[in-house]
Amino acid sequence: MLLSVIVPCFNEEENVAYFYEELMKNKPFFDEKKLDIEIIYVDDGSVDETVREIKKLNQADDRVKLISFSRNFGKEAAIYAGFKKSTGDYAVMMDADLQDPPSLLPEMFAYIEQGYDSVATRRVSRKGEPAIRSFFARKFYKLMNKISKTDIVDGARDYRLMTRQVVDAILSLGEYNRFSKGIFGWVGFKTKWVEYENVERVKGETKWSFWGLFMYSIEGIIAFSTAPLAIASCLGVLFCVLAFILILFILIRSLFWEDPTSGWQSMVCIISLVSGVQLLCLGILGEYLSKTYLEVKNRPKYLVKEEL
Image (cartoon, rainbow, N blue to C red):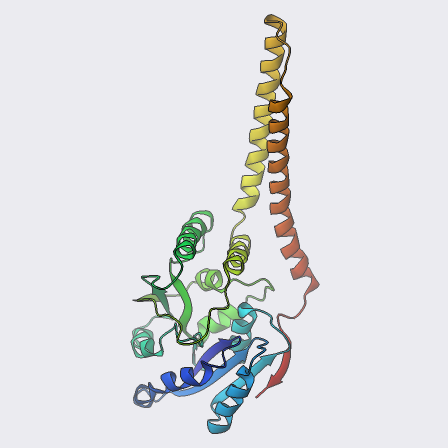
């Protein structure tokens, strides 16, 4: 049997070799289960010496493979490219920074042998993360599970061991705008969750900024829920009803109490509020329209510069 290990990399020159060493500590387990492995490093347009470090490993071990993009296309494109290149009976996606501990592989594979199609991991703590990022991350998962039918578990990682059937199902979803955590939940299959304490990066710094994570969360909401469109429609109806009630109030007050409408300040506030809501709704529509536009252009998800 063959196990494909998919490792997306972006400026991870310090971690590439260290990840390989940690993964190969499972060699007794691989030998016991008669598992051959292929390690697919997907370089997402790194500007450091990540590719050079991967080539060094390739020269020492031909099980190490490289897919190098022509530029940075994002982690989602790297994940898709790794799955597409993989040929194993099983595939596992892991980060190069070792926040996804390779030591969990024996436990995860044991659940596959018990009949599970997929074994996913989730962090039970966010030790080492900024408090504000942890707060918004938890709120995002709660929001997604309320507005979407796709099951997305709080603290879920992309670290996941899958059978070939699950990998093929993921590859069958060919959308350009990808949100893997949602895709994993959407395809279904029998999944076992493995919990572990948060592990901090071994070397280097995270490539995710707060703004990057925020935009990624917007991507997930748009990809797996139409609730924002429904909210925009409800806001439109609400303000129409409110405007009708205000018109009746002003007419009645003018006819019976001869109290003409006054106060430009209140009028400015009302106009500003309604205009803001209109712009919000237009923004929501624009986000959905932009994603449709990107899908219709049918551009490739990535371009390969070099492959070993």
